[in-house]
Image 1 (cartoon, rainbow, N blue to C red):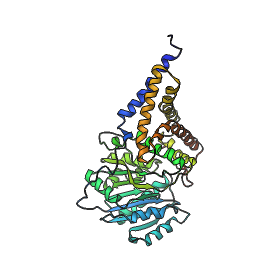
Image 2 (image 1 turned 30 degrees about the vertical axis):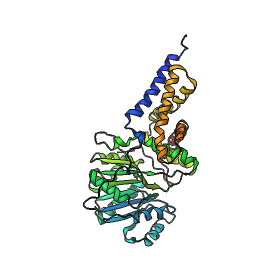
Image 3 (image 1 turned 60 degrees about the horizontal axis):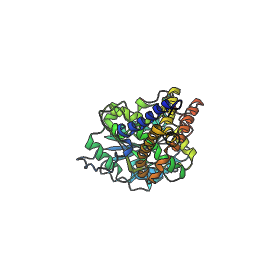
Image 4 (image 1 turned 180 degrees about the vertical axis):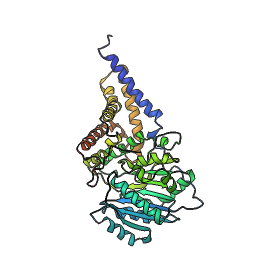
Length: 393
């Protein structure tokens, strides 16, 4: 049989595609197994329950703030626990909704509401609000830990107790939980598990938790930071302009101590993404920042996604011989890795076969992120364009 022109190049391409998936499957910290979870172990209670201050930045969150604040006011934490809400120039009654919620609770004195100062140049809006809350808590409460969370996050009653137990047992500088995102609409069921999957692939949780590895990350919905080590890492000021603030903080904190990141069902996002456009906006807000606003990095990322997610099914369907076998094997590995996060979200495992389609949508959203940045609308959130070229720390 006479080889067709270009057949040799196709074989090389097919083996490259298979090598990519073999590396992801075996050498990327088992990111896809979803083993790092807060329900896999129950650390013992510490001898002393340290003082904790929760800091919540909020901008126009009146629709969710009562559920969020209510979940914090309902914590069964045995130690001293205070809550500082920083109202970041809201125009929808966010602060009043929080105060009303606290007044109806069993612990109204736990909550302090601060009116945030105007945003200074060089700061991302969320981080400026967090900084004000941290400084207020340091001055008035002198906490041992800060619980940095969001206004659209609800916590199970035992979450703070479990976080502190884990932090104290492991002497962690930072303990972070990836909130369970809402997964109810068709768009959410198709795209939300993939959002977590891609995050795990980029920042394998096992590597994040390993002090010997440089990879560091955190999930912004729930981050418990030791106060003294946060100060040693440079404080919130050290990441003042970061759009991907959670991963920037994770990197800073790993320089001063071990960190832990895992999945959870104790922390739930209240933010709905009912339509594809809602998810597009969520992804586009930070995708280009993840690439450091580099057109070359963008081109490389898109090329890598084509090789990783599109080439396997195309080879499996349209090639023959060794290239087809490589495509089938790569597609099988791809589907197997996407299965556990589908099951974690309570979805039918066979949805794992849709990953190439999902990757295509994420590619479009990444391109849109770059386009929005070029238009001066990068990192758009609550009416603010927050993207800065000095991302990270």
